[in-house]
Image (cartoon, rainbow, N blue to C red; front, side, top):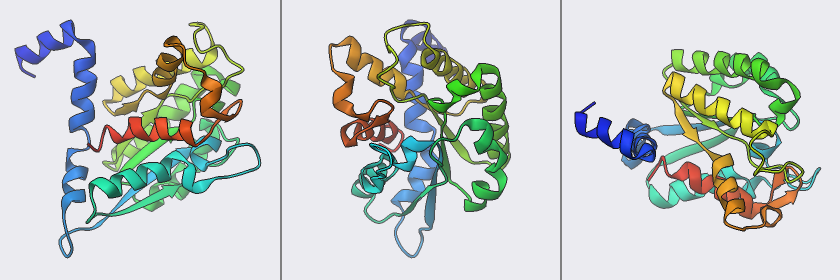
Length: 231
């Protein structure tokens, strides 16, 4: 790392995050730009709970309005010659411990090029220590296979005050940021994005189908944040 970049990281902490977003998936973006017959199918795998699964107002599942497929649409708009799969291995109601147990057989079998992990919303039920252990297990297994991993902080639960620094989602978000930094993997800070909306006077309920499930507008916010890695 050059001395110039080190200075920028001190003076402008978000510079490093922006740099990581622009370069982390560089090899994947090069593949997405290729045309037939030189291209191959890129597998995007979304592992997590009810939000990536597409639950809106339970039990309604709106698959094509969920962020994995909104993201796929944006990627296809940007890379029209790309062959891309959006594969969901997520299960509504699941936490990271449960997801870790089926990780090898039900996730790695899809040979992800990029793996998105989104469990924090439900990991409130198991706490920080157990969540970290399960998340680390999945991260290590994926990195061993040279898979690009992107961790997501939680989307809102409007029954929780997102501006309360001591709330469990805030604490889980901090831990996910630490894990992303520790393992040098990607981070999509969904929680920070929605927190900024609330801090600017926005109504989070306008982005939610029910208390803990985003509506299409909310899913689009998440998809837009992820898309920064593909721009």
